Image (cartoon, rainbow, N blue to C red; front, side, top):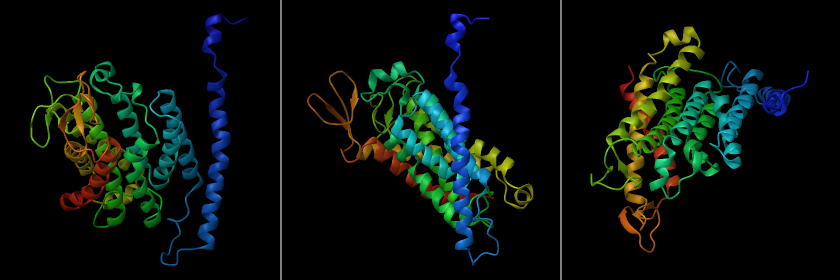
Length: 343
């Protein structure tokens, strides 16, 4: 029986072979990592700890650290949310976060998926007032580094300090792992909150936003411009991160350990605050240290030039630097705040 022309178009061998090729590459790579990890624990054992559990990472964890980031990278490339350079750095980021904890990976996944979707929300309207508008919000390696670089560094510290695995947030019994986990979640909550605020706040609501430092009305797209819709969106963006991490904690942490630990629900509140705080910090930096002007066409630009009218800020930082500094600030401040108010 011959296939119709329409059936031939729907049949794509690449999609059928992709899982096979992915498994063929991922399994040996993960096994090599596991063998190296076991050899390291034997040759250089940790004499300060009676157990080597935190040194030896299971082969399943290595396999997940390869497969899961690759799956999301393919998705990002297909949806044009990443370019090649962003995909490469995104793989290493996902690899490290998966090794440290599935909770950390969950924060990354929620940020990547939701921010990619939100970026495409009413894109036709954003094109009217954004000079650097990019269809699909495609991220390169610089944007990936600025959004996830701080979280990746904290995940490395998590691996070196407390090892690999899922632990509850408990500042009394697990202070170091709790501090690092809240820092990682805070960094992603900040980036997600800021993305939600800028992408939703600019296209929903009546009137122009106001400058966070002076409350003066400014054109849409101005660095440091905020709206009440945007602030609420940033809160929700952080809350989504915290809610997903809360669900992961309940389903991945050992039940006995979880019963003896502090309550985990405050992570939702902490992440929501991180989204709001990070967005406000980003806006303050943007309003003061990032140049904003409007050209003759009414489009907001980030560099002075002929016919450009200055709105606010000095030409000290660019948007990438502001994102990086706000994520660093939130990641460092949020654990301290959580430690004070956590039940």
